Image 1 (tube, rainbow, N blue to C red):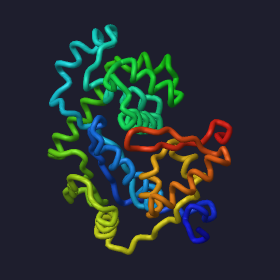
Image 2 (spheres, rainbow, N blue to C red; image 1 turned 120 degrees about the vertical axis):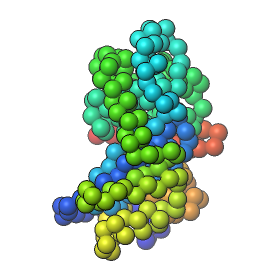
Image 3 (cartoon, rainbow, N blue to C red; image 1 turned 135 degrees about the horizontal axis):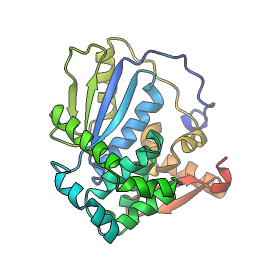
Image 4 (cartoon, rainbow, N blue to C red; image 1 turned 180 degrees about the vertical axis):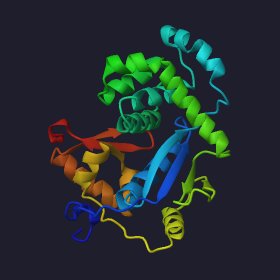
Length: 271
């Protein structure tokens, strides 16, 4: 394992570049496909985010929030489930910062993989918010607010304007505002996204070295075995051996689902 990127030196400082590419990443937060897309975006961030800015656009199966807006207060009061609640919860989390929204989305996907019951319920949304250490008073207030509903309505509007009919999708834009965005529907091999970035930049990509595993966990908190293997382009058995070694050293802890194993830093390892 001497040449493994997991054991490399911590990520060096990269000079500040202009970021000429903009990515709009369309996902349905309740679909498992969002989990795969999240892993792709994380790897692109680690290696190439000196070239692009990006944002997630939530794309639920709902055409409009009009009917939801009429009942949202009642739904939250009655503590019932509805497919729109996870999307609204993500938008409420985003009101505490983009990073908070991303943490909420990642934790929601984790709950889905762990087959947590009542995944679209108010109680589950509150549990996720607590799990990622959001300000609970603020989150409770924002969850049923007009601001969160408007933010989700804005995402649905962007989807219509960009004519995105499938999730997940990524729409790539370059610096030239006159050029139409490139809509890439579905999920593809990582090299395809690298090729698209290179074609749009019209230059060879400079890949940033991957961080150590310890640095990776500090950045993303919870990761699955498959996701770590994908990020480092390593065999699963290789990654599992490294993770078990760190578990024995009490650096990480494991959470087992039916088809997925999640890992996160032990509380004592988080500064």
